[in-house]
Length: 398
Image (cartoon, rainbow, N blue to C red):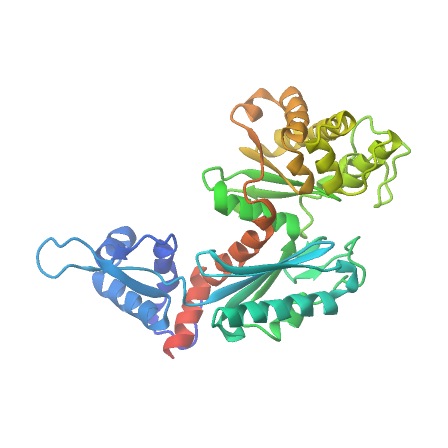
């Protein structure tokens, strides 16, 4: 590991020590020495550097074993803030969080992704600046920006890659554009990946192998394994909506050009089309959910059948990935047990017994906030990583 400019050799490794404090548990210098096996003098130097840089703050004293009570230290969650943006086909949610991931303020507005990157990103940035001002913060206080978009993204560059519902966004340099207004890194990912990460950090840290499936206008999946997002070689892992459903009608053409795709038979528009053919006047996913809530028999049957189609694809995923939990999210998840029952019926029937032994298939707990929470978590993981902490301390104590 290279030494960050301005960081004395005795302080290299400060970021590694900081990882023992990221969980928010206050600890003394003595406790850090026991956990790290470092010399007390090294602990003292590195803790003092993190206090000077603002990363840590004193949070009271531990019980004394004789003499002056030792001081405990913890992450200073107010040191900087994170800007999190979740873009959908027809909405933009913008939030400011602290370094623990706690949302301090949030706003959601109507926003058409087809308006193009300049209009949509500038709209989100303006909202972010307003939220920051309301919290008494400035763009320079932003540790980083996390943004989810409804299409495939090359994560390494933050550029959308031929997104089907995002005209004008292909290869647009999102990090460069937003980086003109905010400090820190700008990290971009697919919205479903961030929903999966948001679900994991809020509810499922005890289940480090998670598969989140978003069922709405489209269908996609986010994969968390060993507590980390699995993106694949180029960032396209989890494109579940374009897996062919066995037995699907050959004349069902998907927007990708292929036939029989899961999205073409089980997403919101496909369910709505089936219901209209039966005389049920629905157009949107919300109207499907409303029909289910009102007890419409045709809607109940259509959603249950969509769950079965989804389950037929997820059964393969279960055998391949062996997740400990499958979370069903997206607008159609609000249909509740009717969708989940169809998924469970087929997954438990077609998957290997060992793979389903402890498998849970549940609805989302983060709901519509999952993307925001995931975007924030993605940035926090980056800016509080060991090397990033070393660089931050070097810059602040220089």
